[in-house]
Image 1 (cartoon, rainbow, N blue to C red):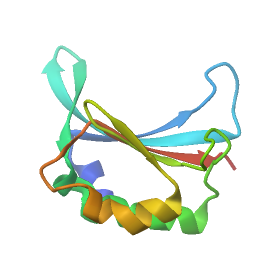
Image 2: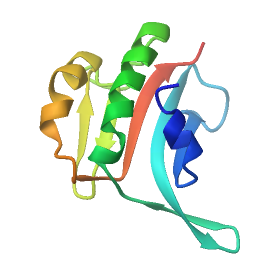
Image 3: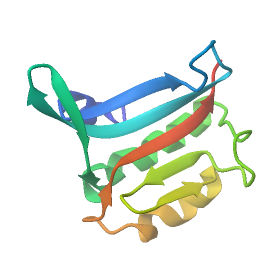
Length: 121
């Protein structure tokens, strides 16, 4: 529900991906990205601004935390949320994400994608 407006926007895509392409995994990732239709069935990822999604992503992450178990097994520091920008990627634990993300990114900062790791129930 928190990301309903993104689902209504044909440029945004929310994908649920299995983390193991060979067999069903006990972990999945939720990926938010923006795409551009190039025509002839071709689609390309494009950057989006933090200000376009912040008011919806933060409540969405909070809701996920209430209803699902985050996957901390793939990270030494317990990170479960990745925000990828052009030249860097930052990983956050849930607690750190909630504490710092609003102050960390300016509204006009470009994001390539946001990925959230969850246990597959």
